[in-house]
Image (tube, rainbow, N blue to C red; front, side, top):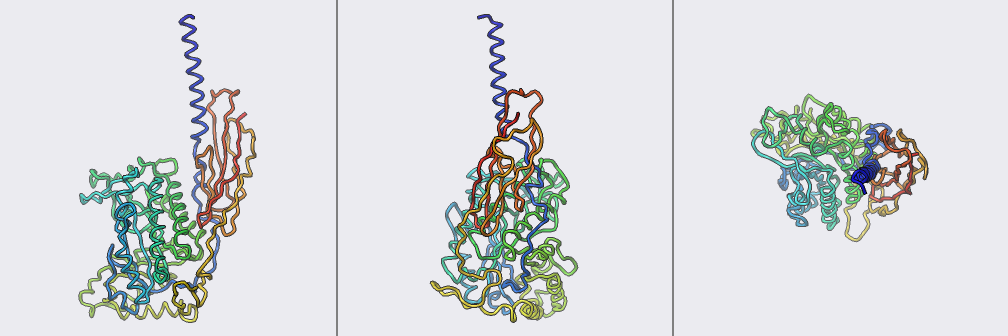
Length: 526
């Protein structure tokens, strides 16, 4: 055999192998579906019944972080509920190791004082160290003060699995005491955050810009760090969607609250990974999450702004959510009201000015206003008047007293307007889903765009549908019709005699976390 023949044979073998490899890459790494299909536009949100008779209303007091609220908060007659604020790692101190001391004290005191509990959780910087040991990447940041903090990449499967497990364990612990679970009326649904329970991750923008550790105050590079980590708006939305289903399963009859910020909650990175308008991109993602929460939970969903003062507001996300049936709530601006100057001399505090701020929230449609411990001692007259105002609108003649639960016996009393059956039968029925277009064995051209359609139903409501191309998620849709556009293109030099196959399937989810998988459709190029 001549050397020339051997050389030509080798080239042919390498070429064929190259085609196989390239064919595999084409079939498994198609461009993502149109971003608008991955993130809802904010339109067509299902209207729900007005929630003016909802059981959640009044003045709540935000406790200091990772502390049991002081006893005077539980004793104050103006207070309807307490809001403990806890980092994840203060409860789950190591994998599967829990410190329930703060949780237990809060609920024991709340039940004894006949107060409600609104539980605020913060992952973000409060993520336990064991999560990173599982391979979850982290972005290490500083606000320029020399102290570095870690924030996890929230779309990593190990992070989602760990936080979902924590939420399930937390719910199971609270449910060990029926009176505790009855006292819990709301929980923050924040699957990603920074140093609080607000729906956000650290960015270069905002009141407190962040810098990558080792950077300087003149080099705002947080966006670049998220860009390098693979940030995409669709990944964040999918993380929210998965965690919302987990919370819905763990707390099937509770209110879910998300505290939002007006802009720049997320970095200015678009679906292609390129830099874009940070305000527009951040607002689009926030609005999509808010709308998805309303679709899932209706009037059991609460949207809150955490910086109300005497001159600003209303917040557009909160106001819009209220028109769609969600609960509106405001937290006072902590810089102004967390420790009012007159608090050291309560006699000098202007009760009328403070009442005017509460009136602003009330006028904006708030059912809940969150204040701080010092406000109770500084503005007792204003808060007593506010209590009467809330009760007149939301409690008197609309929400009679509910008989306290007795272990082992069904809850009796008036039906909850949001949850008419306080002891519901769990939803275990899976959705139905089938791919209706394209059809099996359909031929497609070498390049183009086609519409993938599904027929999806559920006995309660469809939460989301994932559409896969060759076992890779190409789009996630949360509103009918449950389909999306998909584009592909073979290179011009690809042999016309060698077809490329693609498989298409869908997964449907409901709010209870039930999932169904569709038929698989195979399509081929000519």
